[in-house]
Image 1: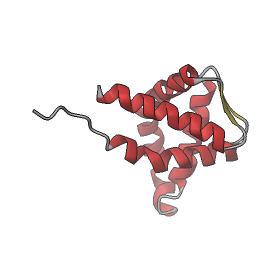
Image 2: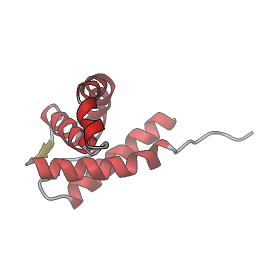
Image 3: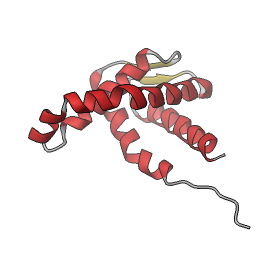
Length: 115
């Protein structure tokens, strides 16, 4: 139940990002759910490799380069998500920034039955 709720909240967050950031469009809620699934796959398989490769740059820039990595992975997810489009790097950058800010809040949500 928690996973489904988190996916729905992330899809709503993607729709909010598309509403707030010019240059990001999503055609509907189903497309936003597909974006969430694609982002999950990208973060599971590609992100660790990219972070390992970019580790020297992250150390030199004191972690600021992670923002660029987030933007690039967000743009990559847009390439594989039907109904989701990002027009340029800066739109992707600010969309990924908003996503990065709200992700810990959504991850903390835990619904459990209290007996």
